Image 1: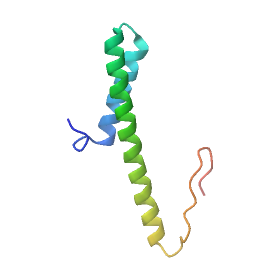
Image 2 (image 1 turned 90 degrees about the vertical axis):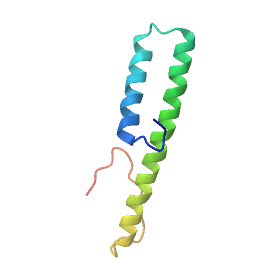
Image 3 (image 1 turned 135 degrees about the horizontal axis):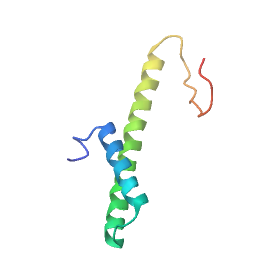
Image 4 (image 1 turned 180 degrees about the horizontal axis):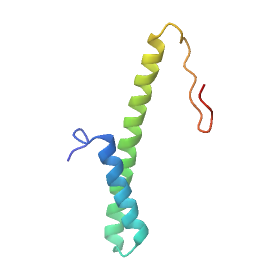
Length: 80
């Protein structure tokens, strides 16, 4: 499945499986490197998809007359 066909949730699920494989050990060095490399690609894909979603949310908020400035949400911060 190519990146263009993959959905965020599918990539995240695949990434979780790869992490589990690496944590369990038992893979050869070559297989571990291959698995790690695939995981890095999935992380980059997921980050790109999250950034796109964030930009869409900012656009929606900016369309509303009540929002002129978008303040980024900080983790741990309470939403009102």
